[in-house]
Amino acid sequence: VHMTTNSTLQMAEFDKEAAKNASTFAHDGFGNATLKRLFKKIVNIGFAATNDSEQLKAISNLEADLTGIYSKGKVCLESKGCLQLEPGLTDIITNSRSYEELLAVWKGWRDASGKLMRTKYTDFVKAMNAAIKFSGFNDTGEYWRSWYETPTFEQDVRTLFEELEPLYVELHAYVRKRLKEKYGKDMFPETGHIPAHLFGNMWAQQWSNIYDLLVPFPGASSVDITAKMKEQNYNVTHMYRVAEDFFMSIGMEKMTDAFWQNSMLVKPTDRDVVCHASAWDFYDENDFRIKQCTSVTEDQLLTVHHEMGHIVYYQNYKHLPRLFRRGANPGFHEGMADIVSLSFQTPEHMKVIGLLDEVPQDSDSDINFLLKMALDKVAFLPFGYLIDQWRWSVFRGDTNSSNYNQHWWDLRCRFQGISSPVKRTEEDFDPGAKYHIPGNTPYIRYFVSFVVQFQWHEALCREAGNTRPLHRCDIYNNTNAGNKLREMLRMGSSKPWQDAMEAITGQRTMSAKPLVNYFDPLLKWLKEQNKEENTGWSASCPSSIPTP
Ligand SMILES: CC(=O)N[C@@H](CC(=O)O)C(=O)NC[C@H](CC1(C(=O)N[C@@H](Cc2ccc(O)cc2)C(=O)O)CCCC1)C(=O)O
Ligand SMILES: [Zn+2]
Image (cartoon, rainbow, N blue to C red; front, side, top):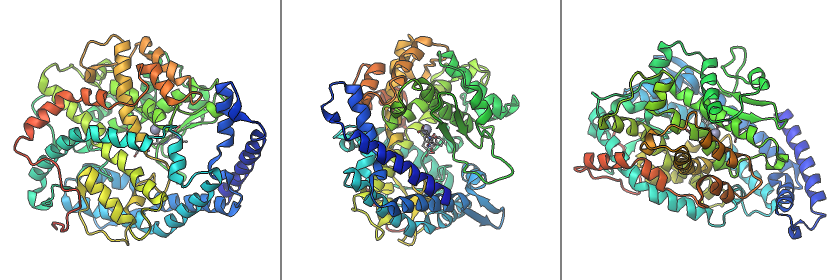
């Protein structure tokens, strides 16, 4: 913590000095748009603008304390001893089909993480809000939203969410029906909500781990990539080579030697590390790294492609001035990280890399595939949306320590249609059980990413001359698609994101239509399945909780 505080203070001193120098120029009046944009970025230094270094120390120390609590959290179970989040608790949440065992792990993790953070988080918010005022923002949320350079950004994401909600409601109703068959309908509240611990994920943010409970056509083909990877003796290095091969096939550069020398690709045995995967740009045009506790599974192979997608973005803007070496907006960086997975996961591509023997052409297999994709990409939408709805309301003071948890569950019940399987009070602090809250990583970027990646996929597949349905398109080996993508990547943050969007799609706005089009065949099937169902749920949380 001491080291971090010093380096934070040193960087703040540098940023302040640079900002002071830059503000001696009347840069607002500059003719050259690029120079004007560069000066604006030199002057816009966030928390570093404060004249009270105690606030900066508090921000850096509290973030270190909060992430320390998160990374040390463990749950002790009679049957399995004491387990940390990764890999122990995650393995149970992923694989257990026992209502009680899942509940013990779900509640235990929240007691061992979020519950211990509440007071520190309140101080953390206070320090950030006090410091950000020196940069002319009312609160930290306003500063974070400023990166999207769109005055109507909050309304825009709300509109996108509302356009996508009907698709989510149908998926939710189908999953609820199948989970009731598995766990018994008595365990489900009358209000239509689904208990939050049954989704194969600690935060119910993506549901593909319970695909086996939900398979639409068990007789038709379903790809189990993890089994195939193990069968073919995949090792960690090979996983990174497979991802590198995909990016090179569309014309991107290979990973640098420094990448292979300096990355941490497996969990070290000699020391504790933060296992939450991450990609790093050292801004020397050569040293790019991934830090990931990689294991040989399908989920991890997708994460490898995600982290390497960030690296490919770094490589494509390394020629720009450093202040422009970022995504056109944070959602674009995440969209670039995910875009390749839309091609990579197709049965067509699985056959190309030998992880699937035959490409099924029947419609049952198609529905199986689309459902599996929806369990990651559609299930995620309300979660990706609500994290920063909660945080923005905390930063602007509408939510405070007297109702942190109440507001969190109001949002979870309202937007995700899930409810807590045990009573929650203001002794709990469930937002803290999700890495990005103690880690202070903004989250709306992932909601934006899940929208724009489908806009880009549609445009790149058109560029590639794809004639298959969008959900079966694979841009592998297509340099036309790669060139189009690179046009956008090379802009970094030197232009407003609307210009970057136009470079790929010809549009200057975000649109939910490509995502809805992609899942259209599934939506028809889900509506058929849900004919007898009361789809949806009550806006507020259930008042009583069924107990096992
Ligand atoms: C120095 C630095 O900070 N670098 C940034 C990159 C940059 O900004 O340059 C960075 O490495 N951020 C880490 C973060 C890690 C992951 C994550 O946090 N994912 C979200 C949401 C999600 C879920 C499913 C999905 O398909 C896509 C996203 C979660 O797990 O909830 C965990 C594994 C996947 C991505 C990341 O890579 O985005
Ligand atoms: Zn990412």
